[in-house]
Every structure is written in structure tokens, then in C-alpha cells.
Length: 79
Image (cartoon, rainbow, N blue to C red; front, side):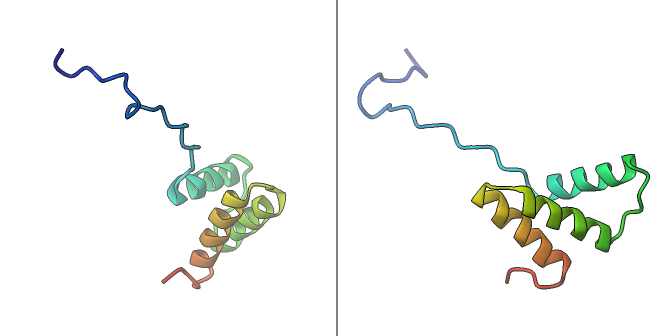
């Protein structure tokens, strides 16, 4: 049939890739959290939230993600 897949050895299922939020999604979630808590949104308040998340995570991938966002916000972005 047209469009059907072979069930041979070339069609091995790969494990799903873990979902990783984009930088925009992470920053958006932090801004929403600040606004819902009645706090002001500033570079300082966002950096504090990112630093708290960085401290709380045990996932090395998320540590890199939060660290990169902090570097960007502090003007030391990845080049």
C-alpha cells in the first residue's frame, strides 16, 4: 500500500525525545508567575527566579538551560 511502512529491521522505533521548553516558554512562565504573585517584572526579578530554579533542579539539561538564560539576561550570552 502507498504510504505504509515496512516492518523490517530498518523501521526500529526510537525512544521519544524528552520535551525541553524553549527559552521563550521558560521566561514566559516566570513572567506569568511573577504577575500572578503581584510582583513586578524586571530583569532582576526574572534573574532571581531563574537562579532559584537553577538551584532547585537536579536535571543537568535544565541546569544548562537555566544557566544559558541567565547568561543572556546578564549580557554574557552565548556567542
